[in-house]
Image (cartoon, rainbow, N blue to C red; front, side, top):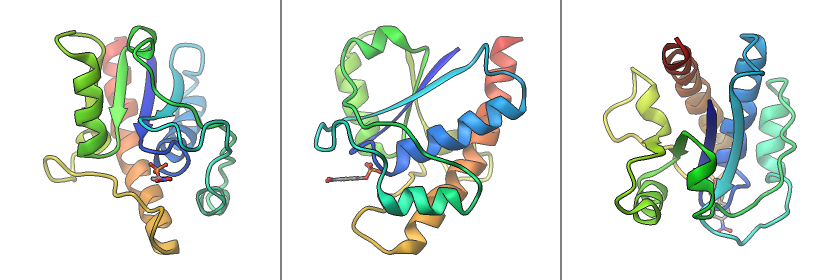
Length: 156
Ligand code: 4NP
């Protein structure tokens, strides 16, 4: 199963979700069957490492974020079975790009967290303080646990 996390810049939220999910998948012994990537709807930060604040927050939880930012393209719609948006704006962008296609599945990340309200987003932490980055990690950890359970179900 191929999964891609998508935010706006691909330097804060989606690389964080990618790092959290990579660790969960590795711990579950599923690295051979679940592949993880991330991308941004925008291209502003192409080639950059994740934001230093995202990397520092992840490192405090034992995660190294090493992805490089890239833009999500139409071709990516053929490369993934599941594309996961961080907020409603990312979701709408992806749905517009996909048009009438029925695959890949496009979902909000927090829809995999049974404790999150319907339609809940992972807010963009970029223009705010440290706490926002911790919150992104908390939200990613809860949702990715649910996502792993979902993936296991899909894999049978
Ligand atoms: P992200 O955060 O979408 O979580 O990577 C952002 C990073 C950069 C910008 C916006 C959001 N920006 O406008 O440059």
